[in-house]
Image 1 (cartoon, rainbow, N blue to C red):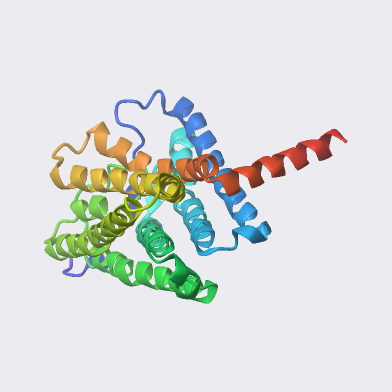
Image 2 (cartoon, rainbow, N blue to C red):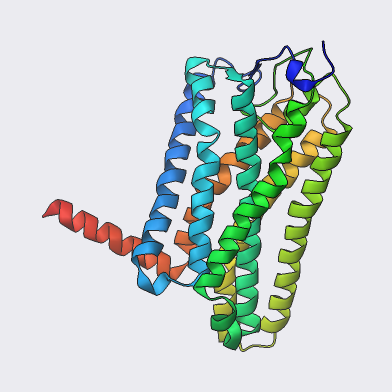
Length: 316
């Protein structure tokens, strides 16, 4: 075994399904596939509605389109392979393909966190400084925020595959999830992984920690402003925030939970990290379009109108 990571004897990893539930995996893949299709269809509907309805060409809905696009990509980066494991027992993944999937999942996660922060800023300006909202959050500026979201995700996550590539893997090549995560892959290395651990902590603090702190601060300012409004204005203001608050909890709670489980769980064959990982990647893409469709009147009306027109056309 040479000193360099690229001399590792591991050319592929083995992904696992659900430990202890191997017999049920084939049938569990059907609801999993259904949830994935719901996620893709729901998010595509949100994007279509916002794009075709000119009254929705506002920063809040443009950010929502970004969120929907990211949700489609993050679920697509993991779900097809997961269903292949459950249905066809296709458990192997090539080393470089694993690194690519790992980068994609973490990259889109950083992007989603950044977009949720941008949406919080949009709500803060709209409620606390309503007269400045149109000048602060112009569509060109929103587009720049979108570009910054991509750059931030790439800048933080590009080192991860490099750090993994330099490690030797000379023992087990069996991962503990149905897809590749940095914190899961690095544990299989037979070398010092201090650099990976430290960089992982830097990313968690700089992205998840900072973003959740800034989102919390924005809502403290929003709450302070809203409490000084009339009851009717309070209801309207809270109504514009509730969908975003739900999206924040739907994303951050499973993500933080998964990070804690990986940090402190000692059992590699435990079912809890696997379930947490699947929830983290599948639940936000499924629930976000449902939450926004139910809680946002403009989107709900447009979707209902769309289905009414479709039904009317098919019946004609």
